[in-house]
Length: 459
Image 1: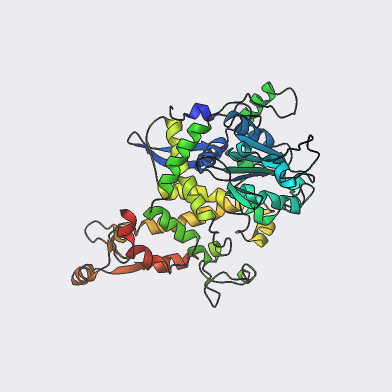
Image 2: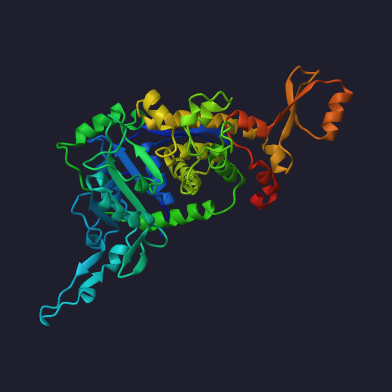
């Protein structure tokens, strides 16, 4: 089987060339900015095997987008297709997807256990879509939990969904802009939202189709109905790409481990709290906080256990898509990729809702983007300590002005460097990574463990 190409991923009807991600990269020995569109980010999530939730007001193309993927990548939902499609409705039954009734009319007897038979072929499909999820009431939404977790229980036996370890759950939901909550007819279950590794707010101005896209759409569409693509199956190639990304994501990586610590233990830190963590009082205790790191600390709390591996997988998938798009090898700063992945993988339950509503009018994607910029400033500071940490040294630096050049220089603090500067009567200042992180509103209790295990992460 030939390898997946970028052209094969291109969607037949959904059109959106807005740039969602910009990444500095080295291509062919030269630095350039890689631009990934909204569609590229979706492709990356798809290859990474991550669940997705598309939210917006009506008419933004959510259904067209997921329909294109289901039919153009996974051969649709008919017999022999690789997708399962369900509409969020009060009368929906998940068993309608996977169970059939067979009754022997000749015997005149009915055995419910024998009559209900599992559609094995349906459980082996790797792509699952629920359109307009929040038109189903919460009890019905709970039935989708198993789909999102890649499993289905029948007659007391749990079956894994998907193929070769690949199972992706995709849903669409309508967003009420009056209060920022999710509404169709019913409120959206927050626990189910947590099972969406990525959330795409297609109402966000930066994620809407460009003005040029609108011309293309107007030329093609004669009516507002969803266009159904001709069935096409590239799932085999997608699964191969997924295996490459998953293999990479399961390896220890010092850069990704660092980002893991930052968004988990780091963002759980609260200098004002007596236990130094964001407990039940967060974010109510942020209003009167005067700590130096409150600008970041007050905006976001630690990510869930589902978020951390999703960030890692999506970051690697960004590099994979960039390579397909460029047609050559691409080197992307892993921390920059992780920061961009973080924009999509965490925001609904982690952002400060008070700030989101009062300062951003419930535009959480904009708030998340600005939060990531602040987090990026902390990442820049950490990068300055990489050389010493990679040598398993204590992350403390000395800054001084070189008397010969007049330029500020930085060296690692140890007994020899301190003595050398003192012998030459050169004044210096000491910077400590732990303190710099705390000044940014990020906890640093993990730093020593990170440094002590550097050799293990580099192998």
